[in-house]
Each structure stands twice: as structure tokens, then as C-alpha cells.
Length: 266
Image (cartoon, rainbow, N blue to C red; front, side):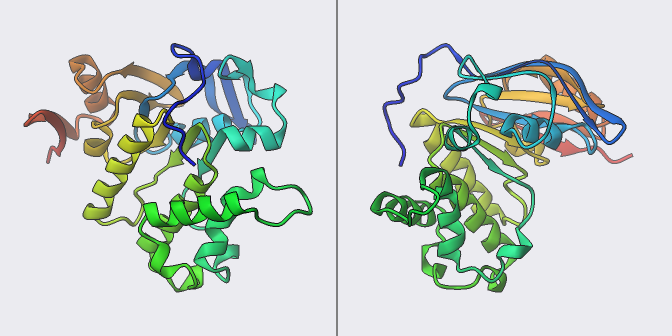
């Protein structure tokens, strides 16, 4: 589980992409992306539909073929075995997993431990401890014996988040992690991310909720398969870029010590 004393060298990017490209079918989705994602920080990726946000996250997770180079703690991603990569980088995809609906909540969360298990070996004490920890952290422990298919959309999302946490990876990639979560559980997610980062984890999330993304340490703004701007949440240039990629249908305004994205009605 979480090690409060990470051993990776400080100052090294957790993930770096150089001249990254992804083509799906005959359609180039990403072209020539260059990006460094700092270790021990929360980076949020925002942008309109079709910007390439999810594609970027899938390339970072190693589940999509890509052109260019991706480095994991200064080592080429291609040099890692699939199992080693899965221990280092955990990925939460959009939506549920229909084929898992008959599994119990506990068994779904336990799937996050597969990278730590041998081909024929069963779950270890450490696997069970990590699974329980993850389910308790996402407040899903009381449903551990229920089938995933009996849960609401928001409850399923918390179980899938538990599966991600059970991996205990250094880097957590989350694609729309707030799907189906009500406001209180969205706040719980924000607090969880802050806890993970405080313990040395690196979190990269794709979010449609721009106001919540403005709580991140770093923001990456994407549109049309390219990175338009990167910066910190207090950067006014970044704010204007976010407004621009959303066709000025939102305005970013100060609220207390933070920021909020307000809709602009035509």
C-alpha cells in the first residue's frame, strides 16, 4: 500500500512524451505531442470532446500503439515488461466493465492485484490487505459481497476506483473518474487525490468538470489532438486558453482562494 517515503529521484518527470503521435484507423488523433508530467503532483487534462485527452491517457498507460517516445521515470516505456509496467502505472478507463457485473465487489477490486501475482499463484496476504484498504478508502467495503451489477452507477465507479488503488502503483491515470459520482463523493475523490499526492504518488486525470480540474497542481489544455497550454491553476494565461478551447462558453472567475468555471449563456 501507499509508501509515504517514495524512493524515486526528485525532480525527475514521472512520465514524459516526446513527439508522440497516435493514429486510430486512418485518422491521426495525436500529432507531435511533447509533455512532461512531474512526479508527486496531480495533473489534470481538460479540453472539449474529441480533443484527444483519453487517447493521450491510453497511450501513457501503454494500451494503445503510438509513434514517438514515452519515458517512465527516465526509462523508455517500451523497455518495461507488461507486468512491470502494470505495477508502475495503473489506469482507470471510462465507464464500467460489463463482463465483470457478475463478480463480487471484492473480486473486482482484487483484479487490481493481478500484476503482483504469479500466473498460477493465488492472492497473498498482501493482496487481501491492499484490496481491503482500497475498498475502505473508497467507502465500498460494506458492499464487498455484492455483485457489481447490482450497484448504482456511482457505486460501481467507486469500486473501479478501488481496483485502481489496489494496484498500489506509483502513477495513477484516471479517465473521467468522477463519472456518476454525486457532489459529496466528488469532494471525497478530491481529498483522496490530495492524500495520494501527499504520499508521493503521481496522479494524471482527464476531467470534464473544469471547476474541479482547477484544484489540480498542473493543468494541460488540449484541443484538436494537440496541447494548447500547460500551467498552474493560478495562471491567467492558462485560464484564457481554457475559455478559448471551449469557444468562450465558460468564464473562469476567482472564488475565495480558488477558481470556478461558470457557464456563459449566449
